[in-house]
Length: 276
Length: 195
Image (cartoon, rainbow over all chains, first blue to last red):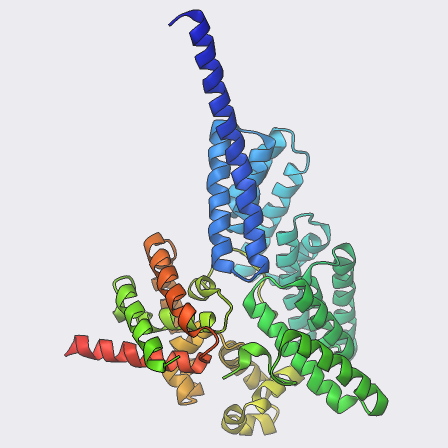
C-alpha cells in the first residue's frame, strides 16, 4: 500500500470511528430523553428499557472516547436505574473531564445513598436531616423529588404523634419547604401533588384540590401516584360538600364539574380507571 | 364483539406465555391478568403492571394520610364499612391505619397486579386473609418476577399477544370482567395439567 492510500485509509477509519463515537453519545441522549417522554406517559416499563439503552450507549461512548458529556450521560442513566454507586463514580469522572457540576452531583448521590442506609438501620432523624438538605439544595431533580417524598413522610408521621399546636407548626414548616420547590420548578407535577397532600393534612381542602388539579395536569411520576392524586381530588370534593354552603358550594361545584368533564370521568366521584 | 372471541384470544395468549411463567409460583394468573387489565383500560402500559416491582427510583405516593381520608376510605365501600364497623365506631385509628396500609393499594388504587394476586380474597371480601398473607405473598412475587424482568423474549412475546388482544377488546371489558375470564381459563388449564 503506498503512502497516499495509507493516508486515505487512516482518514476513512478515523472518520468511521469519529462518527460511531458521536452516534453512541447521540443515541444515549436520544434514549435518555425518550425515557423521560415515556415516563410522562406513565409507560414506566418502556421508560426503564429506554434508560437501559441510554446507559449501554453511554458505556460504549465512555470506552471508545471518554469525555465529560459521556460520563454525564452515564451518570444520569445510572440514577434512573438506581445504580447509585456507579452514578457517583460517573459524575466524579465527568468532573475530572471538566464538567464543573460533576463533583456536586456525585456528592448529592453519595448523601442520598447514605440517608437511605441510615433509614434502613433505623436512624430516621439523621436520614431526614439529609433529605431536608437535599430537597432544597440538590440541583438533580430525581434526587430532589425522592428527597421531598421521604422528608414529607417523616414530618407527617411525626406530626401525628405531636400535640395539635406543634402539629400545625410542623406541617406549616413542611408546606413552606414544598412551596419553595414549586416556586423553583412550577412545572413539576409531583411537587404539586406533595403540596396537595400536606394541605389536606392541614384541612385546607379547597387549596388541596387546586394543587391536585395542577399535579394531574402537569403529570405525575407513576400511575399509583396518579390514582392516589385522583382519590385526593374526590376526597376534597366530599369534604367541601360538607363544608361549603350556598354560593360558595355552587361556585366550587361548577369548577369541579368542568374539570371532571375535561378528564372524561363517568360521575362526580368516579375517575375513569374506577369503572367496574 | 363476541365475548367468546376474546376468550379465544386470551386462551391463546396464556398458551404462549405459559412456558415463561412458572405455574407453581402462583404468578401465572396475576402477570397475565394485570397486563390485560391495563390494556383494556387503554393505559397501554402493560409492562409497568408486570414490572411494577420496579428497580428504578420513582417517588411513591405518600402513605401517611389524614384521619378523615382513612375513615372515608372505609366508609365509602360497604363491605369494608360493615367488616370494620366496630373499629370505625370506636374510631380506632391505630388499628384502621395498619389495615389501610394493606387494603388501600388493592381497593383504593385498584392495583391490577395486587388485585389478581389476591383474587380469591378480594372476591370473597376476606380482608383478614389479605392482611395476614400480604407480606409473604408479595415478597414471593417480587422474587419470582425478577428473572422475568430481564427476559427479553418474554417481553417481546407478551407484547405481541397483548397487542392482538388489545385490538379486539380495548375498552370493551372492565377490569373485573378481564380478571374473571383470565382466572377461569387459567384455573381450567391448571386443572387439566393436574389430571
